[in-house]
Image 1 (cartoon, rainbow, N blue to C red):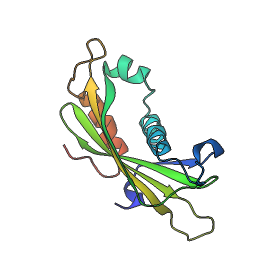
Image 2 (image 1 turned 90 degrees about the vertical axis):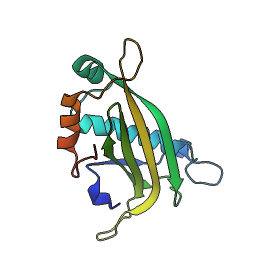
Image 3 (image 1 turned 180 degrees about the vertical axis):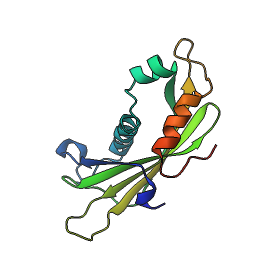
Image 4 (image 1 turned 30 degrees about the horizontal axis):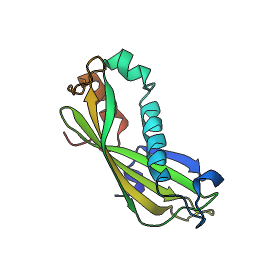
Length: 152
């Protein structure tokens, strides 16, 4: 997938506390970076989390699966782009593609693809915490935010 397919590209700089003794980002932090990307994705959709889901759509979302594939390591003070894209909207679930790229200084240097991942969320009813269909209004918001419409 090309970085240009992602509607959400959020800049993030690696902090000292996120690197390990090998001077690279500790592997678990990439899931935190994904979480930052999803929060920014909803902000891009003009949805305040978590109140926007509960008050506006009477739903919330739980992660049910997260995968991370490591291609190369980020290091302290690297400038990164955390990218998120809704790939599929199911009846009660949605699947996001995630990527992390290192931004290289200098004009004309393409970002370096470091990490790929996938997050699957299930839409739930906040009152009983049981799965429920993704509201149609929310589907419309997501589709209008995406450069490439998610599969349904």
